[in-house]
Amino acid sequence: MNCIETTQKVEFCVCYLTTTPYKRFDSYRYRIEVTVSGGVQAKGLIIDFDNLRNCIIKVVPNHRYVFCKADNEACQVADTLQKIGITSVGYDFVISAENLVKHFAQAIQEVISDVYNGLCVEDVKLYETPNSYTRWTRLPENESR
Image (cartoon, rainbow, N blue to C red; front, side, top):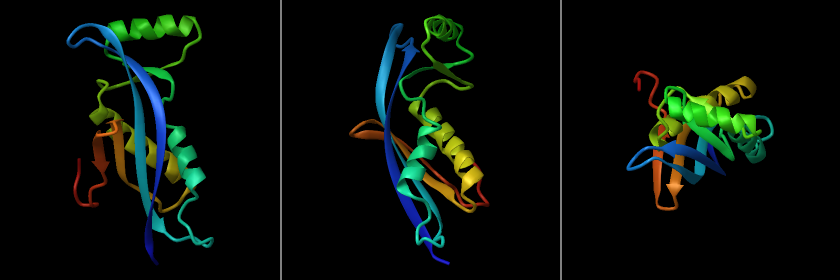
């Protein structure tokens, strides 16, 4: 059986509360690139591009306020936004590109595994700007992160 890789790109926007160098809202228009691998199925592909895009969209918090659940002030902002109908997404980690890319890789793998048997997330790049990104790559089975 052949192993093929397929990559899909999705853009999304988030904002969050930052305290360095001073307290303010910050926002990013991220671009995420997700590469998956697997064996060619009966139709001659491993996953349709639109289906991969939909798996990514299920995970990324587009047009959301994101925050660390351990940050009391960030939680207060999320509560206030909720009162006026703005959805937020809380995470169990400090908001950074490095933590987000690791989370997205794991979450996308879970979504894909529910539908596509044998498909693996191999590589995820999270671009903060056109020139800078953070990358997660799958390690061989005998290594751990």
